[in-house]
Image (cartoon, rainbow, N blue to C red; front, side, top):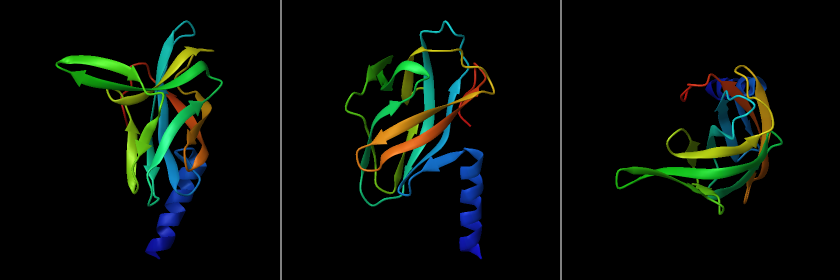
Length: 148
């Protein structure tokens, strides 16, 4: 019975848009903050879960919501927060997770093509080295929103 309960919960989450994946790699809780149409950038956040026994790598994210989407990292460098692009992608460890969140790894939506309005959503595709293409639906939260 416990096994069935887990499957039912997983199916409910998938149906609600909270989780997407292809078996080994799952995307959970993809979101962004609301921004006006004139905003030059917006941030994207999510969690990638790797249920496989081999590391994978998030190579890029594709979406028509912005002119381009880049993977970035914020880090504290001697008391100064610095942001850098990660053109080689980010490793998702075997049996592990990768969290893209404010102040750490995140997506930069460069030149959004429309306003991101609280309560709205947009679709994207995460491209992995091993898992291939995994769809994700991003929820638009309030301008000052933090993680869940």
